[in-house]
Image (cartoon, rainbow, N blue to C red; front, side, top):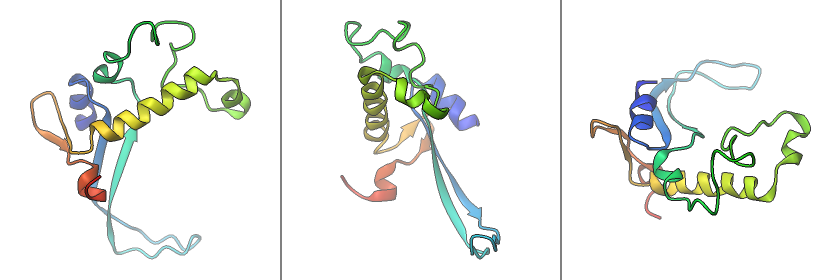
Length: 124
């Protein structure tokens, strides 16, 4: 959570990796414990570094259409009610989050808080 707070304050997307999590037995799914994994989490928020790049005539995030981006409800048929611009903006945001953080993210104090997708997937 502290990583997310620092990233938010720096205007960055909320992406962090939890390292060396212990896998526990889950007989229902056939998972055997004992190994460790790294888990990268992305929380869709509206980073200032993203929203400041969007021209006001393209999307005003306080307008009725975009005021809930990126926190669009996904209950039942709600997903069918979204406009093409809303869906596109979510796609642009997700793409920007990955691209922007490819080589890592630093928090407000300059500390590297996410080492980047390049470390996970290799070069683009």
